[in-house]
Length: 236
Image 1 (cartoon, rainbow, N blue to C red):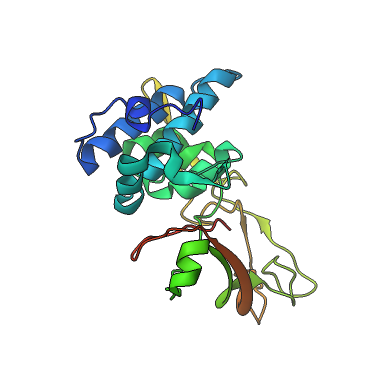
Image 2: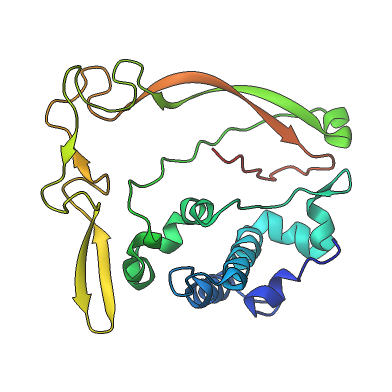
């Protein structure tokens, strides 16, 4: 794809780099260009997203194999780029929770610099395709059970007539901050788990979670030419 930088160059690694080397390079690039370290610097944010896109491909064995064989063209569909995209920095934090959510890197920026609960678990399904569908590409509608907003409390998690209260431990910030030398270390509040609020009288249906298991249907677009074992990620 014209104008698309080579993902190996973006992360500054060789094409023979191991999984650990790629992960380390991404952490270093993300640390350097992190928006919290470069406030107002649009170029740094572009580099941050670029590193995330490169890591999203090179950290996945199937996607990396496609990229090594076809280059950026592996992620083009009908002449348009169909590879990993991130609309904002929060998308990157949600997508790479394992990178930003723990250890020195996560603590330094408070788990990505954004208070809040951790993302829900990914849902994984297997699809069987006919040869015709593989050749031409296809859109599939699949049924799955996932967490939806509780209709009884409308997602608040609180019993009717009550509401959530500000967490007394973190003061509503969702994080506990501690000064440690040059940096301010931030960790998720253990009492409210990053929510900033606590529920004294939970909803009976969702038990305070604000979400409840429900069946739903989603559409998945399968690009032409996929091979057995290829994994496609659908955000949201």
